[in-house]
Image 1 (cartoon, helix red, strand yellow):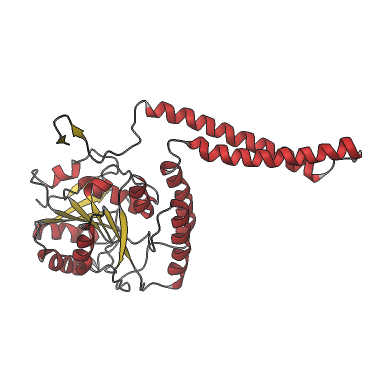
Image 2: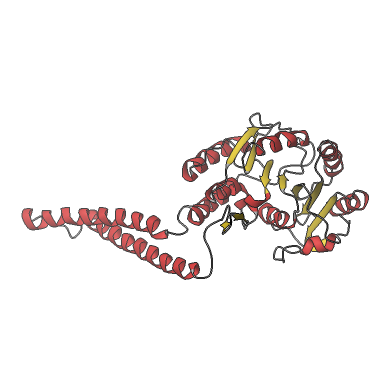
Length: 342
């Protein structure tokens, strides 16, 4: 891999940064994708430790750093690593677009059959990579790291526990640590993903709902050595909004009326029975109902229920229109006449 710096925006043609890095070469066996933002102090040691771990593997490898608009010396350090190590490639964003966008760009440019993602802050242990790959070879498509002993402050660990519990219950995929950035993937599992916003937290869910096998193993986690975390408590609100988006895009993508319709019918039924009760009071017991709060509650529930059902019907129409030009399934294997596979 040549060491020419690649300038890249989020929206780019697949292979654009690869062309910038140099002539096309044979696909590498292993790609390590590392998104980063302002991690200049960690990069030299990370590169050294990664190289030590990867050189022990039999397969070829590449290390692909995605510089998410860093404002410190990260860019120049990465360029120097590119010049000195033919295994290293870099994607430079013009500004900070977020970790999900950085992973998306890395997935598009990576050329390995197996992908590893990890953070650049030295909290992930490169020596764990062979264990992740060994687990992947047991028949899984994604192996997520589980920071069972986590060296982070309480304001990060406590919200993380709540988040993992909610995501597991909603998605149906039970993992102890959805948000761990240390993961191993088969390239096919992430080829059709499009990550944005805070979607990087839900890659296991997206892969799981596309029909791939997902598991996790405990991994070693170090305390942060340099700098400070780029994430605060506000990420919880963003994460839960994106959880709703992921749920719509996976479980209810092809049948949105099942989500909105059920909710609308439940609310409408509540409103109907409330108004029925008031009607009985008026007709059979001659009680005044015009100023009762229940009357307004019943009307509100009926109107909201009708709106939910209407939203579901409109969403169904949009899905049917999109299905004419887009497929909403992932093919694992095709057997053509003569038993040929593709």
